Amino acid sequence: MAAAPQGYFTFVLHSHLPYVLDHGGWPHGTDWIYEAACETYLPLLQTFRQLLEEGLAPRVTLGISPVLAEQLADGAFTSGLNDYLEIKIRAAHDNAAEFEAAGRGDLAALAEAWRDFYGAARADLEARWEGDLIGAFRALQEEGALELITCAATHAYLPLLAREESIGLQLRAAVASHRRHFGRDPAGVWLPECAYRPAYEWRNPLAPWSEQPPRPRPGLEEALGRAGLSYFFVDTPLLTGGRALGVYASRFEGLRRLYDQMRAEAEPTGAAGLTPRRPYYVGAADPAVACFVRDPETGLVVWSGEHGYPGDGWYLDFHKKHFPGGLRYWRVTAAAAGLEAKEVYEPARVPTRLTENADHFASLVAETLAAEEASAPILVAPYDAELFGHWWHEGPSWLGEVLRRLDAAPTVELVTCGAYLERFPPQEVAALPEGSWGEGGFHHIWLNDDTAWSWRLLYEAEEELAEVAAGEARSPLADRVFKQSLREFMLLAASDWQFLITTGSARDYAENRLRGHHEALVRLLELGARLREGGAAPENETAYLEQLEQRDRPFPDLDPQWFSPL
Image (cartoon, rainbow, N blue to C red; front, side, top):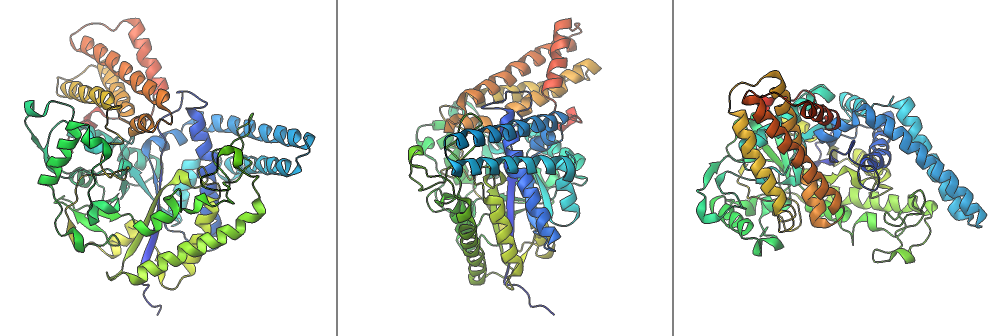
């Protein structure tokens, strides 16, 4: 009989992109999802399939956000991806000719490697996966390689939404979408930005504090349990303590007071004795909901820009690109090196670095678990999936190498989060504070001086939608209008927009998307009011509704009753 392992391990990969179909192309829009498909989703599929063919089940816990799944299953995505691949293959061919003419055989060889990379992606897409990435991931789950989990439907930042109806809509749409695409209900959920809020007396952080009475709100775990979800993830400081006050809180009064109030009313108890390598039940949710905690040590060696593996000088640099075509031919060289100092990529150097990095990570996992005093500990290593392949070109290969080593390690057992919970239910209840895995640990990345206007739009929309939902029965046309209103609201609520504004990475695009979805929502609400009052719909307004239904089309089975508290 085999000895019990000293501990368990799972990679948790969260894959997500906002809704970009029919909302721009390059540099911001559909190229985001085509890049992610070519550089992350297809390579991950290849890595997991290869491991299965070797007789190894990777037991990865993989989240695919509902809004991403809706896009990957859309016919427009597949046709657009084929066109994108053809453009990349042509660019690599042209680059190779350009470099040969300039006497740069080293760069020409890299261009030919890019041509082969995109050619293999096209072949896999057409022949191996038959153009169905969702089906490919579903098959891997059915074969025991993965556990697929969900997320809030459009990645809304749940702790700051003002109404329970909005949270109910996000979770119900998420579960229904997951069931439709993957054939079963999800057990786990990745809370957007790992953002959590416990139960306490809540106030709107944007409204004058003295003019609004506090109102009791349940913790997010209660909504998760009622949606049929069993577990979620939090960052380490939410369990082990530490001041999670962001830099904006000192300048943004509502945010600071919300933080102070939360700390006063939901202070965690006994956190000092808890370990991040065991799950815990959270709050008083019925049915019970557990949280897994991000492991801090293994997170640092991957996430850190200064010390993480992706910053190794021999790996492909993400930022420096050759135009036309946007292909990359240079290596990181040094973490602080400017673009002008980047040296040519040398693929022959990569296998040695992958071996050393995978050895180090696997050893770190084994040593960390061996030192853990808790029985049957689990080390949870969560990352954005797009880190692997898109940001870190060699990332999918590194994942495969790590999984091979851990599968062979006698002291470590690979397991998905759901399978672990079935074997080792939590023995303790943790009272978690409010926070996220954003910088500073609180909400300031998403709510600050630059994004407050977007939250005002959301809060006003929540109130108007609640009034409509509570009203009398609607006509078939008014029901269509309300459904599309809910879709526009869900797209408006995506946390991506505030993140892009705060970080400045695509601020104009994010602001335009916010305003566009809000304008559509306002116009739909006005049309809905007219219909409820017995008026007729002008022809141009019904045409506008049809245009929105064609453009913003995720969640085709959306039920207006989903906009209600769980």
